[in-house]
Image (cartoon, rainbow, N blue to C red; front, top):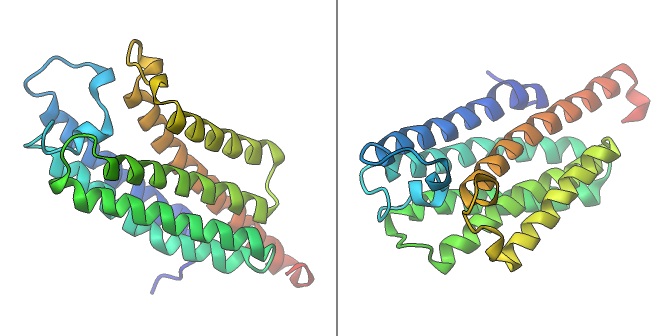
Length: 216
């Protein structure tokens, strides 16, 4: 039996979730670009998972998104179970935001076959997924007493997400760096890295507690 620990989350659940997510996107991208020249600006995740824009390949990325989020659900339990003993309020907020983000990501994958274009529901779910997961990491890092620079970075990304939500014209696709595809992929990569670092941070807290039980 595997024990649900921060180490298990860091070594197994988070990496496997990331591999499944990326594999689904890569498979969908291969089909998406099979009849057109490659253009990185066109690799918008919402388009890869759209039955309108990618009718033969959207299923792989949609399924990968839902499966990756489901695999991360136990990670949310690991973080909350450990961090509530340190700082219960930010740990609870982080857990609730993690649940929001994962629930939204699962819904994006499940509802993909019924999505037509950039529907309001899809846009709200996509933002909820990113804000939920990044916000969860932000509050969990606070609960863990992580490095202030790391916390500030997480907060900065949340501000960027809020800005891009209210000023969508930021994504004009004139260049790669102003394209929606680039920032979607970077945010997904950042989620994976942030969760891995968070798991390592929580793992370190457990090691410290085991070495000095009075610190628990």
